[in-house]
Image (cartoon, rainbow, N blue to C red; front, side, top):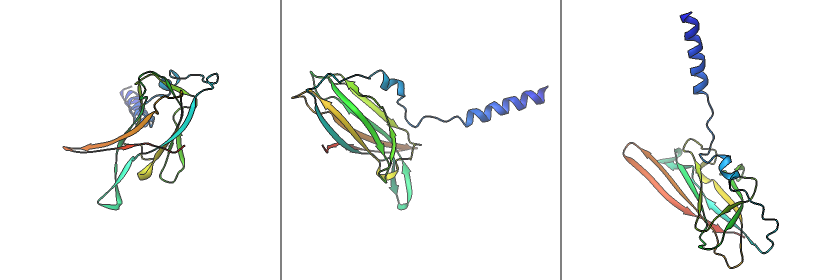
Length: 169
């Protein structure tokens, strides 16, 4: 009896160790709460922004890399208008699409910020990962701001730096 109980406990312990954690701390249900239909809003201006992100950086030489946690902020800089983000695509160093964070338009209220977290263990982006954001704003509204904060801490040492998106369309 004790042997069978031990086998069952070991079996479930192994299952718990193999549990796959999502590669982003922002859960899909958070994006679905922000979903909005903008098909009837015909006076919106479109744009596209590029943001470089580093899920890894080189350390000592090109043969050694150091993993980083990346926080990507999607910010509405308008104090009056709601803005709309249509797409947030994450690409790896080679330009291959890694993941799309939402497949519907989301809204950001005035001065609101949404975040995407790329966990330190998620190295799929590599040393040259990036985002492309498609967005729409009302006429005469300030453009959204997309920026990244990359960081890592080991023991008493820490590393952090930021990047800021540029408009490409």
